[in-house]
Length: 266
Image (cartoon, rainbow, N blue to C red):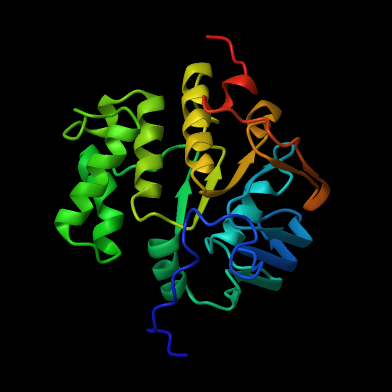
């Protein structure tokens, strides 16, 4: 296939787990990644096998330096594995070059980072609309999606604000809107509340839970067990390997989001 050929979009967001012939949205076999710097090489990911079904909310938890973020970056194509294979929605992607990964991320993968990564000299509206425009949406469609998300996330009236004028929690909600504006099949969240206070953490988790209840597939990386408790499956990651993979009890979530699972003090 030509490098200029756009990869097909991933499965439709909102699909139930196992829908579409039980094709996982993420399947990894033997992924490895070693970081080489000035000192001793760091074996961040060591032969990881992982499957995520459509509609799952998976939390990857473990201590700092365990390799959690590297694993997430491999799934999202932000880093390349040294060895192993990766499929997204049944299509092998580990051999994609950056141009094809960029197109796939624009169309099908939303990514939220710990430090927001908003463009500081663009307004809230422009930060959210930009990914939609890059993915080929019309200006009107981009505006409509942005307006819907700002209302959903409680940010109406902040369209013309600059990122520096917002609180940390508001900036992360803008980052979440930016990640969701193209209705991605897969949402990757890398320590999304790592720089927030308890109130901001609660806001982000309730929003993630709300979108998950509508069928959004989410893979969340966190070192905080309280954050992980909002997911319905928790993977414990240690020294570059999966140490445990547990499905939490069914029926924990309520219409109110994670409030019955996670209690953080003001």
